[in-house]
Image 1 (spheres, rainbow, N blue to C red):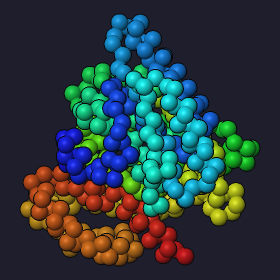
Image 2 (tube, rainbow, N blue to C red):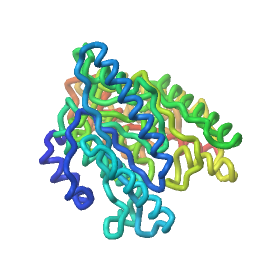
Image 3 (tube, helix red, strand yellow):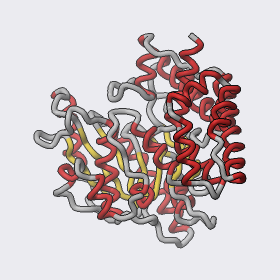
Image 4 (spheres, rainbow, N blue to C red):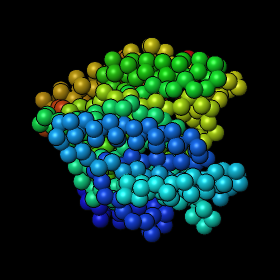
Length: 399
């Protein structure tokens, strides 16, 4: 794990440095990080919403005679060289507008002008990473600073910063939060058809998450960019934001969950409101799902309930074998595989393809003294991505 700014900068920031090398750092406690491409004037509504929440928070602190945390905003205006002139001109206009904002609290990063654009192989992941990495450096990398992911089409509840402050800075619990997700509810700001689709899609996301939770998977949280929050220290510990063209929020959430526990990761009681608009920006996600549903290339549907039952039985088996292995000082990999086959032939084949017998032996070797640690190591291996891959294997077998 990375726990220092110097180490993180050396190991994780080579691609980011050219975009921020001439920028003066911000000084604050809470950093809201927003990637923006072709978002003027929509992003002004997002900023207005965040500023309204900031004013509400500061007023509440004043009533309580408490010092408010300083809130800063990092906006990465980005595009690739291949993007259209319309996109580039829109970004140029946004940069001009942002230049007039309070520079003690706002920092616009130019990843869009000629000679400063992102590469053709980069997209949403790097756009978000540039903003977050800059905020991380500005924060000093401490557990007393927060980095908040946000999207340029998202509004927040008035209590957004109040809840963040209470959850991370004024939490009386012995175990301080290291990361969290907020709730989400999409704005119904599209056409009647788009609104109908987003209601169905949001219901699917939340129902899928609930089924995973019931099955015993720790990977049940919905991965949605503007819901993600973590301390600066945790940001570095999990390796920072990735460079995936799309799905960067999914992989980042996975990383956060692997360096936190049930006591240091939570869902906190405030809601963000992303747009339900059709989007061309990424090949999958909310906007792409709406677009695909409209043109008939995508159908909103969850996996079979039977798959979740298989997952549940597999997780229960993993817990049982973990306890038995530690108690008797043997990995019991053969029994693990054999009993997995009793749950599902496809599950057994999946595990063999993943060379699970060797994986399990290695996990046991490094966690042989504690059943809880071994079970957690199992979950770190059988993560959200492997869960989806298992579901797809089960789905293919049904066809």
